[in-house]
Length: 423
Ligand code: 7TS
Image (spheres, rainbow, N blue to C red):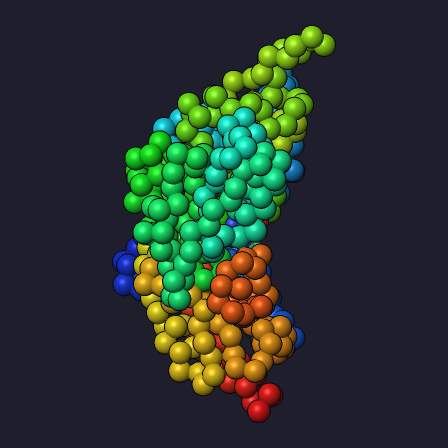
């Protein structure tokens, strides 16, 4: 409670511990008040991007209104202010991930750029002809294509951990794939297409027993699961701000300091150097070596506000609330005739991917849109896993902590309408 006795969003109060205080939380998100085709918006496309709370919008506005300046280079007041806000977000991210050092936190454009950074810098300097990179069958294209490009360039081979019919990784097959030629394991924590939560901690330990580093794609995990990179012992962890209540165009790559130290720069330019002559350039120290050019300063500052907001609610509470929602949504959808859920792993987070007998996912999405319900329909940038399940597309409802049971009931009602239209 604040001094006026008003409950502040995310504050742990008795009410929130009994229920979750979701109606109060929803008021923090202006976009949730929007009406679509004359109906209240039911936003179930959170795996694509989350909505933004007012505090994040306000923080970005404040930066542009009264703090706008470039960082790391000014001797003037505003530049100092912007630099402090930028660097204090780095420390907030370090705390969020429980990384050991601020210099292990690199600001990127998002998960995609984080993975490309590792593929270019680590990959190009460490991978040779005949080497192997291990990924899984449920990866987003962002964690497939950069490795394919690298393998093609180097004459290396991509190996793929298969999944069972529930959408769980076959861990014995994984162990079998690891060998002396494996240079890196790159695997997603949570699948965007299936919702599977992979057992990444034991998977990392398995790779480390063979001296193989592991990159974790945390794009879908960061909004739902508390992460401790030291406890997981992952070597790299990438995520995007925009799926976690933050702005688009900003993300994080965590890397262990000794690995990052040993890697060449990804891009050249301002800020990543300490001295330049035409004969030779001396690179800056971490993390700046990997942050060439003027960064997305407003995005970084907005991400800081988003992490503060999410941390005040608390990821363990978010995870518990969302687990209840997911179970309820699964129950509702399972009762719909002709509906098949794609991805039925024992450990799941946030995602309900499904197909309806004889109805294309895009038609499902279009009819639901008329009801004000936003879902995603398509291959979810995970074409190989669609193929694995024998479908070209699914309809996907993906949840956030501001969704409600009533919204899932609206989804189920909308799906009955879809079936009626095609009857
Ligand atoms: N990895 C996973 C597991 C993802 O779900 C996504 C985005 C990415 C990487 C790429 O993140 P970006 O922020 O760099 O684009 N996934 C989705 C999705 O499921 N629908 O839209 C984007």
